[in-house]
Amino acid sequence: MQRQFWVLLGCWALLGSCSPSNRTPDVSHIKTKVTLARFDQAFFALDTTQLATGLDSLSKNFSAFYPEYMQFILGVSGDPADSTTQRTVRQFIGAYRSVQDSLQPRFADIRSIEKELQTSFSYLQYYFSSYKTGTITFFTGPFDAPGVATVRSGTAVGLQQFAGRDFFAYQSADLQTLYPSYLSRRFAPQYIVPGVIKAIAEDIFPPRAAELPLVEQMVERGKYWYLASLLLPYHPDSLITGYTTTQLDWCKENEGLIWSHLLKSEDLNSLNPIVIQTYLGEAPFTQGLSQEYSPGNLGTWIGWQIVKKYADNHSEMHPSDIMKTPAATLLEQAKYKPK
Image (cartoon, rainbow, N blue to C red; front, top):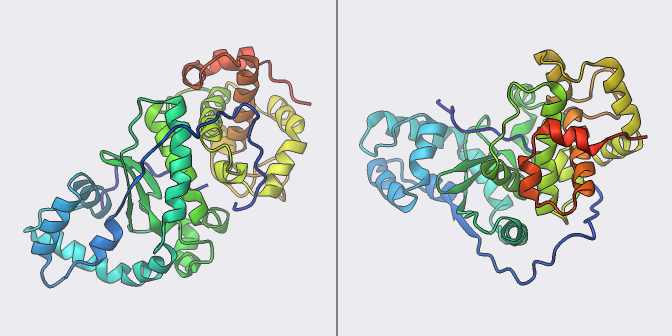
């Protein structure tokens, strides 16, 4: 199946303290509308004995999302009359029926997600009033399909990656290989809204970290956690970082130690992909640091602290200006020296 172009956004521990800044703006006067679409329910309601008719109707009811789902998730043309499309759809429905049936009770009522999105979109409109959020479309895809992705119609949410850490399918050997427990523990509904916000942040500010040295990539990635924290001021940091509360506490208590380790052990201007992967890749822990308490992707957390330090020093700057500031400039002016 072809899934190029769709960007897999990692799902982000369920617990964590939340401490919104006293600079958090009042958005009570901002009214936002959240449009949700249940493509997942319509797709699995198809009559597999009359697929041409059903797919034609589905393509009209979900005119923007349908072709993307067919092309990038199922890897077919989507032409209702095409025999390959019909065969693939029929096979997928048969293979994932039990998954869809198990997901439905968990997501029969999505009003709480809608309310969360409405609050977050109010902050989004406060900072970026010209951005149009579009429709949030829920779908069920293969387990290696994205959890969240930006699409032409807005944002797509793959429910197969948010069923809860104890979901039966995540326990299989194949999925444990694809998503080890340090990743699948994040596959919970609480991560949907942060995932949507992170996807939108990357849509507003397309990533530009490629080819940059290690420390600049850390800062560039940290920018997105900084922006997500502004748009999700009442969400715990664990849902933004994907760390457990224990890992977050360790990071905060050992911030100086982590920075010192980086300065002493690595060339911060390294372009070595292995070094970059060590500090910016997903892993159960960071090599060279505590295997019990350190999280993977630790470089992004340090980058976030650098960005926050810079933002504190430049409180007059709009978040969009901070996001656009080159990482090298931001690093130099932040004067980051944790103890």
